[in-house]
Amino acid sequence: MARPAADAGWTPERSVAGDRNPWTIIAVISIATFMVVLDTSIANVALAHIAGGMAASYDEATWVITSFLVANAIVVPVSGWLADVLGRKRYYMISVALFTAASLLCGMAPNLAFLVIARVLQGIGGGGLAAVEQSMMVDTFPPSKRGAAFAAYGVVVIVGPILGPSLGGWITDNWSWRWVFLINLPFGLLSLALVSAFVAEPPALVKAREALLKRGLNVDWQGFVLVALFLGCLEVTLDRGQRDDWFSSGMITTFAITSAVALLCFIPWELTRDEPIVRIQLYGQRNFMIANVFMLVMGVIIFGTTQFIPQLLQEVLGYTATDAGLALTLGGAATLMVMPLSGFLTGRVDARYLIGAAFAIQAIALWNMSTLDTQMSFANAATARLIQSVGLPFLFIPITSAAYVGLRPRENNQASALLNVSRNLGGTFGISLVQTMLARRSQVHQSQYVESLNPLNPNYASGIDHMTHVLMNQGLSHAQAAKAAIAQFYQTLGQQMNMLSYIDVFHVLMLVVLAATPLVLLMQKPKAGAGAPAAGH
Image 1 (cartoon, one colour):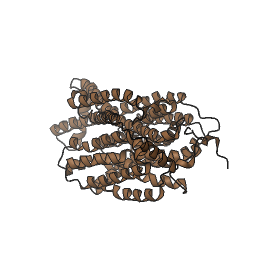
Image 2 (cartoon, helix red, strand yellow; image 1 turned 180 degrees about the vertical axis):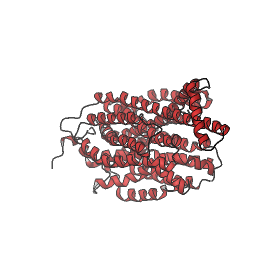
Image 3 (tube, helix red, strand yellow; image 1 turned 45 degrees about the vertical axis):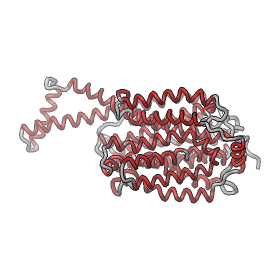
Image 4 (tube, helix red, strand yellow; image 1 turned 90 degrees about the vertical axis):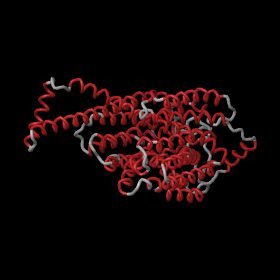
């Protein structure tokens, strides 16, 4: 049978499936990614329990999250180079083994310092897995089938963060926070066994690695140090900034300056290397550059709202961690149902139309979230998340497929790594943005309310008087009722101020989505007859 025109330039010699059905590879390599993506969000809801169990403050316990993100951020951009040097399958299995062993150490940690070190090892192990898996799929599936392949794989990437908070809340409420980490052990061992048995190291990659080593391995350690300083310090700045009051903190200022200087040195250094550890020349490809911007925005949307919605339900409406996490479950189910349709359409419809429509759905969903109020029900929150979740598959799959247009097959490892850097950075930006805006807008609304709340304001006085009489009718004395009325009034007021702050943040996220959408018009149009973007030659 003739190969579709869309598959021109693709050859099966780089496939990791060997003589097996390539679809089995999706199931095998998705296990480890599900474990890592789930762990990224599952630990957030366990922080209070970790702090209590370790006799530490909540602020100290947040280093459990920060340390993982920093280590992860440092490894992701160099994972493509490591896969080329060590061999893709070997590097993948080393990473899975390290993540699994580190999970065991996390679950057995006797104190907070030990736990933070174990989380660093977890981040190092998990950092490169998603990038290596995506390059495996790009090499294994011809462009005409990549949409369906990424749809199957995208279930893990998108649903993992959605299920994480609810699963983490249930585990910490019913078992122990240690099981948040120990739950990784069976997944890690199963992944190692299946990868060893089913994933092949293609002869083409073996030859490329031998040629690379024969030429003499010139390690760009300066580039590694610079990218580690840039991304590591940036992660600390974004993750700890709001908590430490941003640039009023000497530590945050130092990390921010270090990150900026490292970036300014890193770009010209890598552009002048013959064998750079990060091939930033890939950003010269129009589709790849725009796809990375979209991945950044997608990370902001997914991770920002995934943390934000449960937080809203807990802080404003008093939900438990488990119930707040369950509000995201309906959205996860919607994503699972829509993902196959997205994969089907990605191979048949211009990716630019799908991405544009998906951003429109995100804008509508965020606008709908901005209409919520303190009287909303669980169904209102779940439905708001469902609308957003329907559009997510039409972002992840078309963006990932379109990113490889014009790239050569040997650049797939590096391209996958950089796409994951953008998605992870977007997640960090998203969480930092929503928390900073929430704090700032809360202060603004509080000052606005305080200006008008005084005994000389007739509305304030009549409101307190009405609530006092209601409480007196319930059996309280006048003094008790007056005191309780004031307390109840300010509690309601605080709830309203918090809700208005959340609404403001939803508006800003909507504007971010609308600002990014026109970039779709600048993307390269797929060639006529292409079922999906080609990987290049």
